[in-house]
Image 1 (cartoon, rainbow over the protein chains, first blue to last red):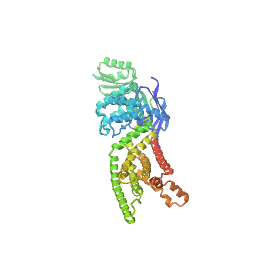
Image 2: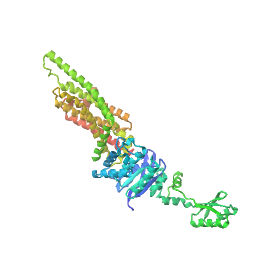
Image 3: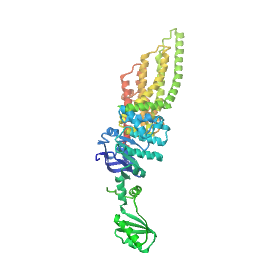
Length: 317
Length: 257
């Protein structure tokens, strides 16, 4: 699907002299689930607030479903369900009356309110507390009421700011499967600094650091690209003095280290042929191949690599 | 406009669910009861005295001006405090609970939010005024009331309450702190009452003419006398409009901060 639901162009926001986000550009297609990843204070929440029309940017533009957020804010807001960092719930209302209120506020037609409220209670599993006052609910339930509230108008776009904060592991798993279930029908942006969350539920990630996009790609490709350095770990049974020389002379080997007597860390050109050749060398030398593995970066490494280096120039996708 | 009514409905619920309204009503009722009992007693003893001294049948004293007038003035005085307390939470609570985020990301304009809250606050203040109407009504069983001036007075009181609501709402929109909102609301209300006093110390005729026109006391008095002037109605609606507009600007500015 090529039609972009959310288009962000040259988005910049200054808080006084502090630049919270700097020249963001990205598009999100219909039905996509995108993880918005970054350390605390990277500008995730600011970006989300601007997309929802809660806040105005210093410059740049945002379009949701073809409507400009600043020229047609009401049209945009009708199409967005937003869960802020703190669930926006009224303590003095019951879960059910609160959801009805939100549905009305979002402009849902009267004859659909009942069905949508039931649907969102069902999806977030709030049956047991539907008549209770929100102020008496635990943090986890409040968070679920918050998610429910974002769903209740059946919006095209769901923007969830750290949706699993405060939930227990089982509920976290439920929310993740809920997000998967909603994918395709809704376009979803999830912000988080919890990496497994992104891996579990997103198709694509945008990594943001200090207000700039440092990477955006699918999770697999991002991990692949980062691991292309091709470092091979090799452990042998018999330590032969000649082995180090043999291996370093092999085709495709860039560098070699021997941190322990029986362990070699070999930087290669990353091709499978080189790895096969290395294995052949070890076997033929009689050292006895005990373990061989290619070092693979997980998302965490990618994230740390992208967000900790000084003066990151941004990875060209 | 649907958004405004949805918000008004929720806020009305919130105002009536909280104990605050009932506590305020209770306090006001105690004050009014003592005051009204005192006023009626005084009226009776004065009428008696007049009857004894002059041999008249006691019809010389005007019930409206001796009892109702002062009762309504007390109601007005209490409303300054009660409405400031009622309206303090209109915006501070939304900001504290972060539900302001929900309102601002919903398909409603800042004007809808503010008008919704004005409606809710005004209706609640009117409910409080309705309680004060019990005293004149109870009086109607024992004496002959002048309904015309009484109704005019209550219309004036309703406009006055709406004015206090708009002022309190504005104070509430400026801060996240309930106490600060009440204090600011009170100060603004008292300031409006003192604006008219400027006329007494004014030097030039122009100054005096201006302060006469913004003298809330004379405008309110025209209702109490049973002859509301058009200028008074326009004055009240303008001040309500002004503070509603100011609140709308404050709410709108949340997007730019």
